[in-house]
Amino acid sequence: MAISLSVVLLLAIILVVLIRGGSIKAGPAVVAILFGFFLASTGMAPSINRFLDSLADTINSIGF
Image (cartoon, rainbow, N blue to C red; front, side, top):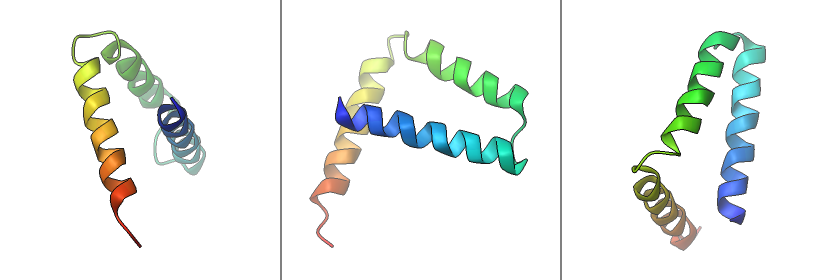
């Protein structure tokens, strides 16, 4: 739960920076948000969550 909330917050910050910087306009940003929202309700959502969890575990296991 904490990882997914952090990812959502990070992606929201990146999206705001891209919109304010002019790299992405509001229309494509809304489309990207809606795409993610509807993708989350498909059968692919559990696979995506497992992939992101394994990616987070892999990054966490790297010792710096």
